[in-house]
Length: 258
Ligand SMILES: Nc1ncnc2c1ncn2[C@@H]1O[C@H](COP(=O)(O)OP(=O)(O)O)[C@@H](O)[C@H]1O
Ligand SMILES: [Mg+2]
Image 1 (spheres, protein in one colour):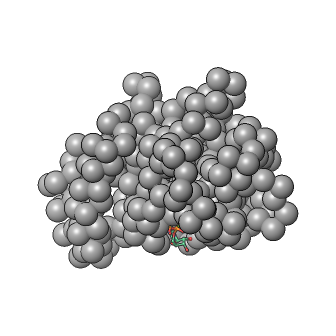
Image 2 (cartoon, rainbow, N blue to C red; image 1 turned 120 degrees about the horizontal axis):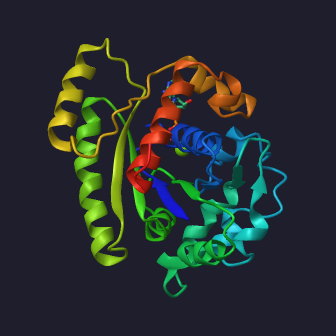
Image 3 (tube, rainbow, N blue to C red; image 1 turned 45 degrees about the horizontal axis):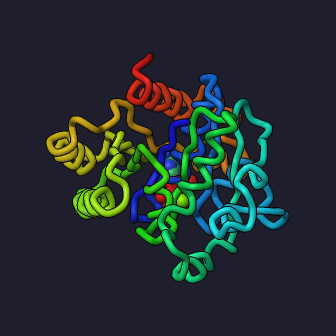
């Protein structure tokens, strides 16, 4: 079971959109996939058509140890795709966990139990936009980190900061964590500034940038309001095909095939 966190301390960079659509594309490509929503906003949850208000258990209950992860997972209507849903309850977790011993490894332990059941090939974690204890739990439970980033000037600053944080997290909590890729989102090559920033990114991060970039297209922002990943909303659209390509790159980087 390969565990991949989608994280970036910045909000609005395409974490959730990429987590949903990479998870969905992995499912389409035959990988049994779990999308684990760790954001109290629950956008990954609603983006897969799961009602946040009617959850019996959520990622909050799993983190605080109230229920085994297996009991909180919901099968979606989409191929090979399940979700561990989230809602606002998770916003309180930060406080409740502060006194627990080894609080950074709560999710890791749950995923180790899940791994024994051999239900999933891939677990994709959608992280909140912060380096909170919840995000640290995600990074402690993951072998892989994918960083979605917009191609804009401030992204460069943000990435430098994030790289430092990742280095610290590796040293303190999880030495086996690797940055598996930086994924450029909401790309519009016609903007001149975009091209400048892109060439900077290529200079510093050429070895980890995904070859595929995700274009800025309306359908990717529309699909969640229909509770569908892009593949099921508009199968042959640009965004759908790009996320399929990214999923192939992920498989190739992690398993060495494709
Ligand atoms: N490639 C894209 N093209 C157009 N809109 C996008 C694209 N990716 C994300 N968005 C939109 O940008 C906003 C932020 O994206 P989101 O995935 O929620 O970011 P994050 O999870 O990092 O906060 C959302 O409204 C989303 O629909
Ligand atoms: Mg998000």
